[in-house]
Amino acid sequence: MSLLEIDLVVPRDAFDVVARLEVPSGRALALVGPNGSGKSTVLGAIAGLVAATGTLRLDGRDLAGLPAESRGIGLVFQDLLLFPHLSVRDNVAFPARVRGSARAAARAAADPWLDRFDLRDLADRHPGALSGGQAQRVALARALASQPAVLVLDEPMTSLDVEIRDEVRADLARDIRAFDGPTIVVSHDVADAALADEVAVLERGRIVQRGTLAQLAAAPATPWVRRFTR
Amino acid sequence: MPASARRRTRRPGPVVTILAALGLALLVLPLLGLLLRAPWGELPRLLASTEVLQALGLSLLTASLSTLASLVLGIPLAVLLAHSVAWSVVPRRLLRAVITIPMVLPPVVGGIALLLLLGRRGVLGQWLAEVGVTLPFTTGAVVIAQTFVAMPFLVFAVEGALRSADRRSELAAASLGASRAQVFRLVTLPLVAPGIGAGAVLCFTRALGEFGATITFAGSFPGVTRTLPIASYLAMNSDPDTAIALALLLLAVSLAVLLALRDRWLPGVVR
Image 1 (tube, helix red, strand yellow):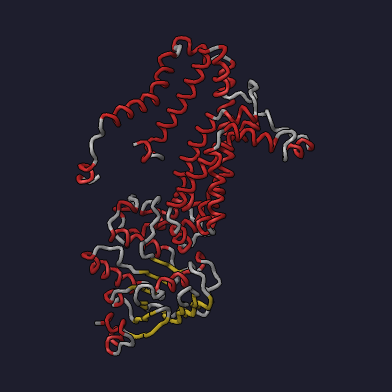
Image 2 (image 1 turned 180 degrees about the vertical axis):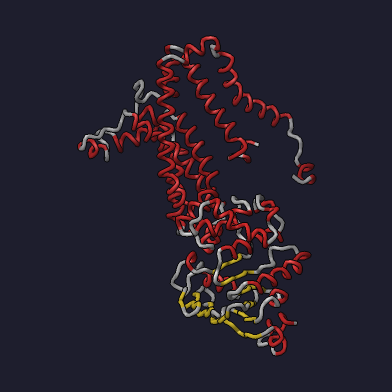
């Protein structure tokens, strides 16, 4: 049973973003809040893509001093950021490739992920030829193929058409349950927050409330939380 | 184009049409004249002459070397230029202006400037002369002159590619475990490769056609500095048929480049 302990501060012009959170493995935390509250900044700081001070402990080991590539944080970006010059197969094979596998071996390592996310038939396509839902599956497969200790999803539904969100969300709920490390989902949508076991609300760079969705709805700490849970 | 926009574009009037036709004629007729006047029957013999082969070989060699030099020096310069968006206004614009200068400067001026810098009595040239290095009027001088004139084309092509490639793809690669070197090799380079290719081809053609800076800084010694354009110009006085043959050779290379670039690298330009 591992534990992710986040204690990070990101200095910014308008306000510092302060994140103190713990997420046990096998559990999912939703980080929600209004636009511009600093949610994506927190994710960037966790992934090592945004400079921050403080500590980021996983099982007591501090990751904060490590560069992004050594942290083992699987990040699915809001706009996915699939590599446009690589096929679906090579996108998913990328983590194995950078761990030192030859091209063929990396592709073989990608196969189970392609199967699991039902991407076999799309394996030779390039990201430009995928639907939103397909691209999202590739991004998730690619992130999980890096065998991350922590899974982080930034606004996982915003790149998708509204009609397919419920379906994709149901798949995502299943994938999050299957992941045995800590998961963090950033969203401004209460339906995404329902993917998580617990919700933390960020407003102007501060965590203003934590709890289950039901607890937040029962006793909202701010007007935004009240609107969010309504 | 949406239908409404097309309807609003009025058919050009007679004045515009006539001037446009004249403009087109100015661009096309000289080349047509070259083709009509070409001594086609004599061509194989003319092209096989020592003079022509020497100039062709020298041109291909120097243009390749200056393209190589432009790649080695120009790609880092493009990276710097792409990064300069984060600088303050004055140094940012200064850098861009300095790189643009050789593109707008008459090449002869570039040649004179190179001579004043690297000539035997030049600012740097004196020092080089002391250690026994003389650049002017050597094949090396041809390469320097061509690089001076042609490298900016490569720099701007690569800079454009760097800017349009989503830098955040590099962040995604890092989060998937890629080291800096792997990010560059597996993500950045493939994303900007088309820009590098286009830049290299533009650079090569510009170097191949270089005349003014070359003749000023490197002179015209057969086999050493007499490249195709210079040989063609000089032959015009004594042996017009050879001059035309040389000109056709340059035209053929340029057209080949245009065709090669058509789909891959300059879709917006050619289509």
